[in-house]
Image (cartoon, rainbow, N blue to C red; front, side, top):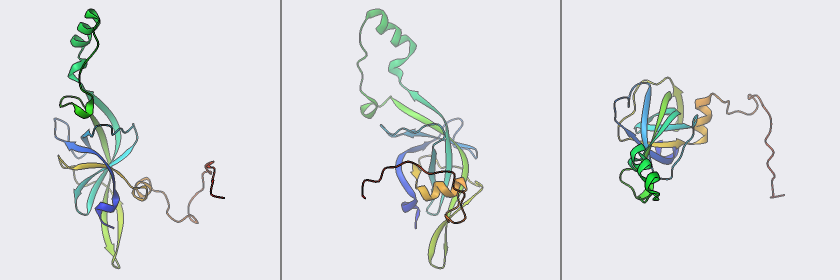
Amino acid sequence: MGLSEIMGREIGSVIADEVSPSFDTFRFKALANEYVYPGTLVATKIDERTFLIGRISGSLEVNPHESPTRAKVREAMEIEADYPEEKLSTTIYRIYEADIIEEGIIVTENEKDDVRISEPSDMAKAGAPVFIPGEEVIAKAMGFESDQEKALCLGRTRIKNNST
């Protein structure tokens, strides 16, 4: 299992600004039509065997077309906004902030790769991809037990299985 198997859907890239990256947080510009919500776990690559896991704590949309002045002019003149959507725009984008909570390291034991979760010891790299990590990584980061016999059952979901 390499980092490519751990990396899920890419959703953006780490940016460098006055607060990011640091040892506590990283900010990233989201790809168009990629949305995350407060509390979502995201990850960013440090090197081929190391990644950081962060929890979304904030977001901001940058859209100069919707400044108070421009919005007021459109309102006063009763005209509609006419500018490209985020996907086609060079000036509209979303920035998310993630608080770093864990570091993942891919270790090899007995010719088998595994992920170890530990305290963060590095900071994100500007320009690095940001992705949604796989379920196994999220479970390890949250401290969930992988063996069902040792785990605490908190309930069951009601999912209808149509295959029977």
